[in-house]
Image (cartoon, rainbow, N blue to C red; front, side, top):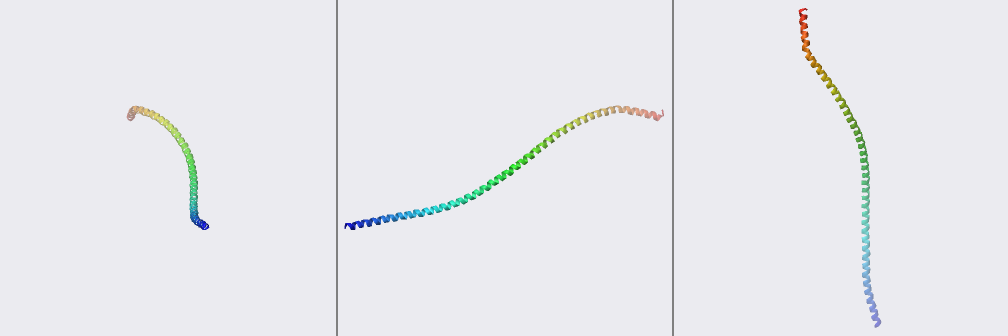
Length: 149
């Protein structure tokens, strides 16, 4: 009887422990399945992100290359424009210097011509004052010549 009771307790305990172990085994299996599911999803997400990063890296490289190309072209254009600006500045300086030189020469010529003009005006004025005298003398001379002096 005691042995039967012991066997019954062991059997009951065995099934109780077996049910608990089965439940724990099922839980471990679910955790394992979930682990592989999640790691698979994470692996897919990582691959997706790596592909996206590779694409972005390629785009960044293109943008960087284009930036340096355009910056180089713009720097070349700036140097070209600065050289043209220097040439234009020199030309403007020469033109300005020439303008003032020619303007000075023309002003001198104008003053010279004004002086000659004033002198000629005096000569003409003197001639106008003398003209009636000369006409008078010419008339008298003509009269006498006509009378047959």
